[in-house]
Length: 264
Image (cartoon, rainbow, N blue to C red; front, side, top):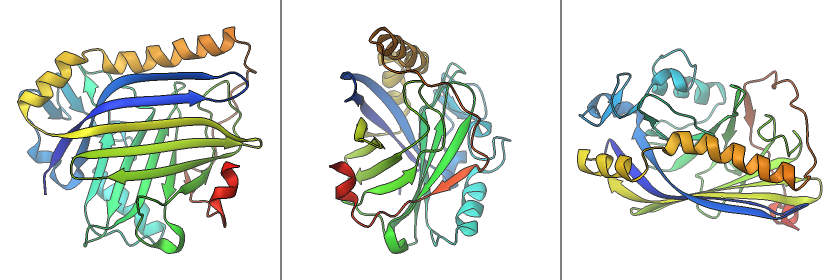
């Protein structure tokens, strides 16, 4: 099994109400085997050191620079989730020392390679974060056709209330990866988001090419968030003030009896 790979692809975001607003932009991100972070340093990428591309362990988990795999295993143990295999982190890298990740995904497998849990670690532009720990109903292996739900707990956009729920789905193949996040309010589906990419080897050459193709990726993420917010404000989409962050740092799966009804 590889220690890491690149994902080169796109992010799509579409709002359906009260006005339609859709945008797509290119991105690249990393998927890292947390047990093998020490093997990844090269001239273009570093862990807890300066490189053109890097990650800092203080940006994730306990946010204190401690071991990420140990932190995630402790969280799984507390939730009685049997995921004793590899743990992979999907994230945007720091670029020249700067990063903003709207969401990181931790993919937690069992020893047979089955996906047993996904942690969606959501960050907002106010420096707050919240974690959604997702499981399949009954605690089984998460399959490509499974929809996983969790109550929305963190303020992300001033144009959406902290209410309703998210629906997540994950599809992985040897050549590509896909994540979908749909947000439902009381009226039904409001926002569709998808992150899709093709897998490339984690080599200095591919890292350099990704950086040269998108040198302002992380700055661009923040700029696009504010630009789209301005567009919604100009369209007079209702504005919601930011509430206090949630008291509990982790939300767990909401198991709907008939998830298809939530889409109607």
